[in-house]
Amino acid sequence: MTDGSAPHPSSPAGAERSPAGSGRRRAPSRARRRLAAAGLAVLAAVVAVTLAVRGGAAPACAAPPVGAAPPVGAGVHTGKATFYDSKGAGGNCSRPAAPANRLYVALGPGEYAAGASCGGFLDVTGPRGTVRVLVMDQCPECAPGHLDLSAEAFARIADPVQGVVRVTYRAVVDPALPGPLTFRIKEGASQWWFAVLVGDHGNPLRSVEVRQNGSWRAADREDYNYWLIPSGAGPGPYTIRVTDVYGHRATATGIRMAPGQVQRSTVRMYGAGTAATTTRPAKPSRSPSVRATSAAASPSPSTPSPPAPTPSSSSPAPLVEAAAPGGCA
View (cartoon, rainbow, N blue to C red):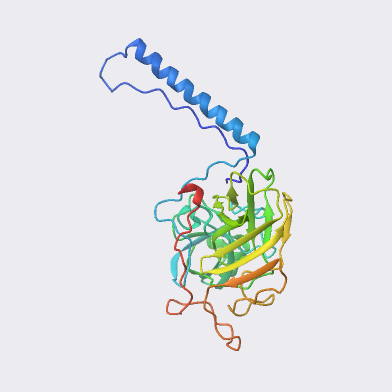
């Protein structure tokens, strides 16, 4: 699991082999040139790692697999489920801890999509029923359609003795929010290197921007789910604008440079009230420091909360199918 700590130096390339059965020997001068080039490459890698560690930079994230995309929209997917225990840790999505209800899931690289699925929810249906789980982790060995559920979530849909069961699953559009957005500045951050983790956004995120000198600067999502501006965003406090894959947008100010602390804002990603029973956008706050908007269409507040979306439902179409991290493009 990549967590943004100091990067590891890459191993030097192995010596070039002669073609099988050729019996030829390389000229000594050519060999010396190859050795010298290899030595310079290793030295450059060591210097780069040293500078990155001193500057607090995170390692470059790996590009998502070709065709990688988080589960979004109203489509129903089929696959299989297994289970594991994160032992209370927050997984590859860098949550401070597993959710209190311990209902979470790890996705394979194709659906984890280099962190693009982090923070979203899936409804998973098995032999015993349906459970709603938070996308919190990556399962490196899982193919698309293979969900690695928490042990508690698996027990809701099947007998754990089975170990592996067939399931169907779909993304949850506009799930109930536990509260306003949260922000956590990463340890090691400073005015020269900015990294923030956004929480309680409900749907997968499309972008995070920081306002600086009168304009918005886009942050790059790393595969461990922090949003990074390598050159920094100044000393703060920060105004941060968050947009999800369905067009909901919220802007919060007053986020301090307080590494390691979870800061709860006063603005929600969408909805009104803790239950967020409808997708009506929250009215802009009268406070000059916080505002929220939404570009998604919403039902009338008098309409009962609909059941989980089906393939024929008219759920908002996602703006992007795969929100690939900017740093890996």
